[in-house]
Image (tube, rainbow, N blue to C red; front, top):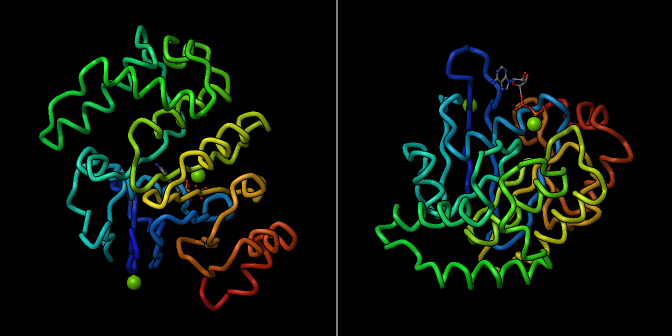
Length: 256
Ligand code: ADP
Ligand code: MG
Ligand code: MG
C-alpha cells in the first residue's frame, strides 16, 4: 500500500530558472519509516518544501500522488488537512502564545478545513495530557511560550508534540544539516518511535547517518543532484557512512 508516489518530479525555484529536483521518483510504503539521505545541496529541503506546497517552489513536470490523488493543485493547508505534516525546520517565536494555545489552533485549523467544529476545550486538554504522558513530557511544557528561549531539545519536543496532536498520515522531518545535539536527537527518535503506528508513514530527511542509529528506517533512499539514485535497506545508510557520498556519485554516475 503506497501512501505517497512521486513520479518524474521536476522542481525549480519560482523566481529562477535553475532546476533543483530533476526527475525524482519515489514511493513510500504506508506505515514504514523511509529515510532520504543526501549531500548538502542535493535538494532534500526543496523536496520537503515541495511536498508541503511551499509557494517558492514550482513543479514544472511530474506528479505527487498522496493516497492515490494528485496534490499538486492543493494549498499547504489543504495538504495538512489531508494528513501531511512537515515538521518546521526553524520554528519562529510567537510572542505571548503558549504551546497549548498554539497546538489548539493547529488542531482546530485542521478540523475547520474538514468542516468539523473546534475540539471542545476539555477534550483538547485530555488529549494533550495523554499525548504528553505518552511522550514522557513534563506538563509544564504546555504552558511555556513558544520558542521563548527554547533549547534545541525543546524545539524538537515542540515539534514532536505537534505531531502527536495532529496524528498525521505522513510525517516529513527534514533534519537540519547543522546537526542536533545528542539530547535533541534522542527526543526526536524517542518521539517518532513512540508515535509510529501502522497508519503513520515517516519520511526522515537527513544529511547524516547518525539519527538512523536511533530511528531504524525500513527503507533508505539516496538523493544526489535532485534525483533518487539508489534505494535499499538500513544497511545502505551504514555503507554510505562508511564510503561517503563521493562513492555514491561514482557508483551511480549513470543515474546522476
Ligand atoms: P539540501 O537540503 O539537500 O542541502 P536544498 O534543497 O536546500 O538542498 O538546496 C538545493 C539547491 O537549491 C542548492 O543549490 C541551493 O543553493 C538551492 N536552493 C534551494 N532553495 C533555495 C532558495 N530559496 N534560494 C536560492 N537557492 C536555493
Ligand atoms: Mg523528466
Ligand atoms: Mg536541507
